Image (tube, one colour):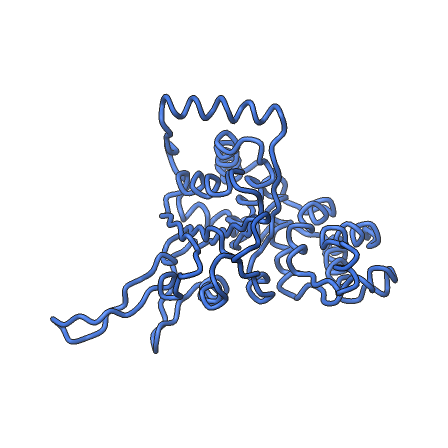
Amino acid sequence: MSSLQQIFGELKQQLSQRIIGQQTLVERLMIALLADGHLLVEGAPGLAKTTAIKALADNLSGDFHRIQFTPDLLPSDVTGSEIYRPETGQFEFQPGPVFHNLVLADEINRAPAKVQSALLEAMGERQVSVGMRTFPLPSPFMVMATQNPIEQEGTYPLPEAQLDRFLMHVVIGYPERSAERRILHLARQQAQQGGAGAASPVTAEQVMAARQAIADVFMADSVEDYLVALVLATRQPEALDDELARWLSFGASPRGTIALDRCARALAWLDGRDYVTPDDVRAIAPDVLRHRLILTFEAEAAGITTDEVVHRLLERVPVTA
């Protein structure tokens, strides 16, 4: 294990100590950071979604900002706007909250489409265009958006173009009994002692170096063939299963293929390996693909979910030797 892998292994351990019972969320948060992508987290209130991104910010040298999405929010409230300065007679750009390393878009589906789309350019191009000028965003830059699956009244579902910008869509549930007791003990301890940040936070340079190391992780041709076969099966399901063909209307885009590759490499690297296995691809596939598949009306009427479709794909697509 390299020194970089050790540093990020310790970061993962520190996050796990603060975010108890949500190991999947912690791991996916780390993968999104290392794979240079954005994360959409769905779960009931009180499951440490906001706490997780704050804990990551506390352990990084970058800055953090939280945006509470509401129906009356404007696009300029996210990206920033030009302000007229009477003393100079000129307009001056005032950066919005998106100009931070880590941005939490809390309850993103509570804002209308025009506000959600304000994040499209920022997430895809790492820049913001206002008028005739374009402003680059800081590096590293990551958006973690949350949405509540319980309350659907007064919400605006994310369009497919917006969903495709997210590297992963993670669905989290309630912690187990043992984890619940540990959460209770930690809450009491923090109430008495207060929280503390990392002694030596991870720097932006170390994040960039880790991303380069992940890009160099070896992927055999057979694993790459399996990865591509999984994505192609979402577009041509009739070749595998007639039922899948009735369920799927549209499959994953090439952006999904790239996301699956990057996430599988990051997962292998976090595990201390310099090579990717088919199990890495299979482990990360549900979070990478669930928001990129569009079901038919027949599937929705039958109560079929994208998770069930991905599970069927993983059963049907053979692992190449």
